[in-house]
Amino acid sequence: MIVKCVWEHNGSDTLLYAVNLPGAYTRGENREAAVRKMAAEARSYLVWKGDVVPEELMVEIVEDAACDLNVCDADSDVLFAAEREPLTGKEYQELKALALKSAADFYALYQAVPDRSKSNAPMRRTFYGQVPRTAEEMYQHTKNVNEYYFGEIEVEADNEGTILDCRRRGFEALEQKQDFLDNRVFAGSYGEYWTLRKVLRRFIWHDRIHAKAMYRMAVRTFGRDAVPDVYSFAE
Image (cartoon, rainbow, N blue to C red; front, top):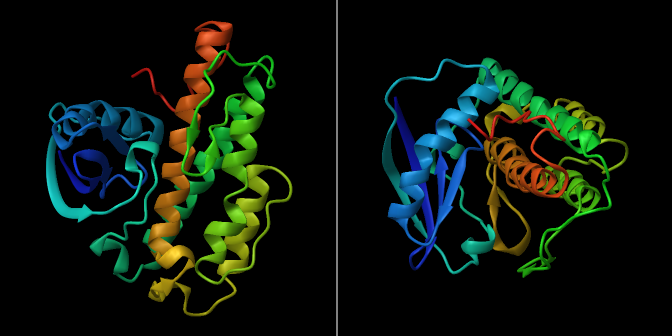
C-alpha cells in the first residue's frame, strides 16, 4: 500500500498527513523523522478503522505545503489539493461515518479514565494556550471545536451535549444544504481556507491528536490496563 502524504512544514519541523487515510498523521523534527513514523501510524489507523493491514506500507509525498505556523505544536492551515474535489454521496457517507466513529471512540476513552481530573502530564503551552493535561480538559478541548469547524463552512452548530451528540447535529444541519456535496471552498477565520472534505479530515485528525495524548497520559497515570486502546495506538 502506498500512503500518499501532504508535507506541511515550517522549516524542518514537520506535520505529515496521509491523504488516503483521512486524519492519520505524524509529526517530527524533520520530514525524514515523520516519514519513519508513518507506517506505524497507518497500521494503527487501519486496525482502528477495521480494514485489512497490508504487509508492506510505503510513503509517497504528493504535496509540499510550507508555512510559518507552529507545526511542532500541531498548528495547521493546509488545504490539500485533493480536498478541493467534489464529494460523491458514497464518499460523504463513509467519511461522515468515520468522523462519528471517532467521536464515539473518543467519548468511550474519556469515560474509561478512572479519574478525569488527575494527570501526571507536565505543564506546557502552545500557540493556543495551555496544553490540556487531564482527561476532562482534553475532552472539553476536543469537543469544543465542533462549532468552530462547522462554522468555517457556514454551518450553524454548537458544542452542547457529548462530542458525539454535537457532531451528529452538525452533520444534520450540513445536510439541509442542497449543494453541500459540491465541496465549495470557504475563506474562513485567520486567512485559512476550508472545504467539507477538510472539515471531515480535521475532525478525525484532531480527535487522534488528543485521544493519543489522553491514552498515553492515562497509561502513565493509572497503568496500562486502566483504559481500553480504542484507537489501537499500541498496534
